[in-house]
Amino acid sequence: MTAKQRPMHLDLTKIRFPSTAIASILHRVSGVFVFLCIPVWLWALSLMRHADGFSQLQTLTDNHLCRLVVWVMLSSIIYHLVAGLRHMVMDFGVGLTKQGGRAGAYAGMLTALVFIAAVGIRLW
Amino acid sequence: MVAKQGCAHTGLRDWWLQRLSALVIAAYVLCLLGYWYVHVDASFGQWHDFLFATTMRVFSSLTLLAIVLHAWLGLWTVLTDYIKPRFLRAALQQSVILVLGLSAVWGLQSVWIGG
Image (cartoon, rainbow over all chains, first blue to last red; front, side, top):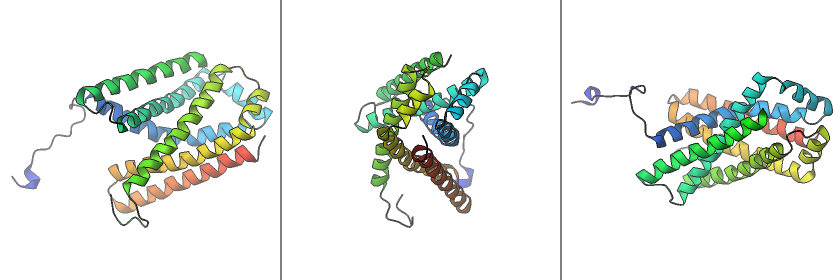
């Protein structure tokens, strides 16, 4: 077969992904999303300077939809943080085997979920 | 990874910078989240005393710079992975740098010329 004739399968909807792959792409997606959220956080920070800005923030976040948005933004930070720490744990050689990687992926996702839930509870 | 980048790039420096900046940001996020979690009903005065104390201002500033570094390295990787056309990638990289640079300036301004 020439290079052009080699079979290729890249149907993402049909490929079964290991937990480690899911953990990894979530880390990447959350990272890009957090970057996009940076202006929002900076805008909030700029409001925190003054009392009227602060109460403006309070009024805004009294709204359920707004709290949901904040929760999504915080959740992506939390997941990215936890998965990032897992990366650094792996730098020390922990969780590099097939089973270890899978365990680490699940542990990371579970830890992130716990914190995300805690933040959600606090928000509401 | 060793290519004509305009400066001597070994992957190792970026590897360290990514992790060091990550630790700074992680500490900051945990600090802020922790404060909010404990003082969920804090008043403006309390938040103000917390955020604009000198120590916190320095911490915020360091974190802003860490974010610029960390986000740049991360997005550089993502762009290199997915955007193959060089001009498009270069344009997007410049946009990212611009956004990060302006963000750092805006953030530093809020932190120091505020409160």
